[in-house]
Image 1 (cartoon, rainbow, N blue to C red):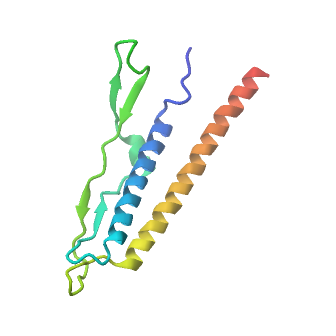
Image 2 (cartoon, rainbow, N blue to C red):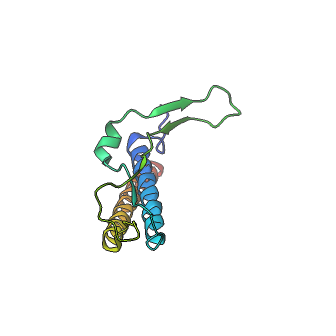
Image 3 (cartoon, rainbow, N blue to C red):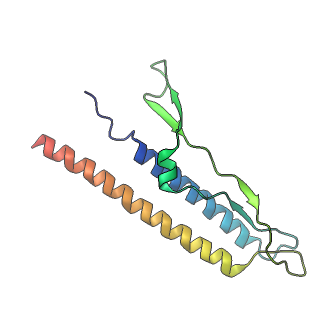
Length: 136
């Protein structure tokens, strides 16, 4: 029986969640860099997926049929979509970027990224421990 420790649903979901966090951070940084741009509208991404939702989603699987292609299966989760945030107050220059709101989103995103990173490290430590015990 072959065990593939690095291709499992939890790790795939963590990767998808970290990708979403990275995309959100890029959008927040873009909002902050345009805080003084007249007419700029705040953007965000659809970010309602939790780890539980990612674990319950069926990834789109791609399997290789030829040896010269990458081995194993690749999974792609649906990507979040960027959108213009509605209902935010605009300044006289029609820019609606709020510094406090964006800095809060940036810190929340950073915290979530750190948390998922620690969970992923724990997962890999468990795998390493299992390998070491199997070799003893």
